[in-house]
Length: 391
Ligand SMILES: [Zn+2]
Ligand SMILES: [Zn+2]
Image (tube, rainbow, N blue to C red; front, side, top):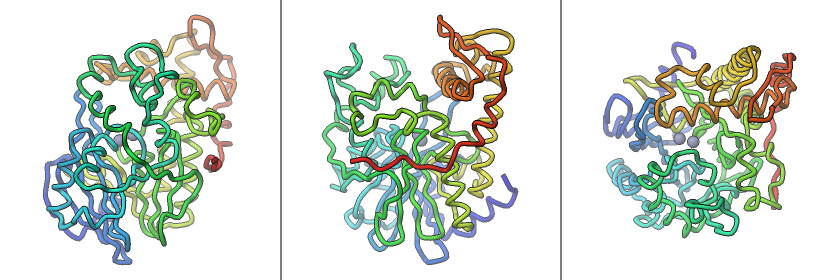
């Protein structure tokens, strides 16, 4: 990252409304863009324990002609967020809607509570609307029968979801959602949404004029957003079909890289964009401004490098995802739930390596190198595309 990018973000800081802590928890900030448009950053607590601290969830109020909120924090943070808005001089009743950047719990966990206190209308991508409902007939058998479809593929163990998720599941399923379609959509004058799946099938980025981009978790400073696996489509296929039939259009690492390339194109068209990510914009006592094009290139390079490292591991013989993860990741990242996340990350890279012809899968779920080395050419060939709009 370029060394003065933090300073570039600083030029948009108009006021620190609440200082919060060194990782940004509770650090309420008013940004003012060149046009005069104000964006209020409202970071809510988001700590799951272990080594994978993303930092708080940065929810944003955009004070456009019709003001709105992006994201609602984790479960239990909804009321807190309302209090933060009030402390920043925002009356939630003046907002026109809350938009959910994507359906991960650190972004919509607080949504039902927020709606209870504010009666805000909810907007999200059409896939979000489908995946928050329960479908007992299509759910995997067992304890997940009454979970929303978006949680069916979750790899967290029962001890985690009984402690953290059951209340959240119950309230989500009643929510009314105003669906946003795929491709590019005008939410209001000068504000456009882009459907950029890969980190999650329902990810949206918001372009504010020529000057700002709210990216959710699609691009983060410091950390590389976790890509989905294409095989996650199989679990929710009965819910998404017949509207969505192609797994590669909304899930997986190649899809994520296409979304990054689309952001690269947006960065090229609007070279002065300030980027507002959902985590780590402030962390460890520092502002993390990003040059969008540069950060996209870094993230793609990171995945190229990781594919290469996994292929090198497989050149010594076939291995399962867990065996690859143990060789590839640092031991402290593999503690607790980290090992499950790491194995999922390996699967998304192995899926890409299978498409490029460099890896094949054997019985016993072992991956094997084929001897070819085409992944870099394959990744370079992925185009800046968005999924087509479907009705
Ligand atoms: Zn996320
Ligand atoms: Zn997140």
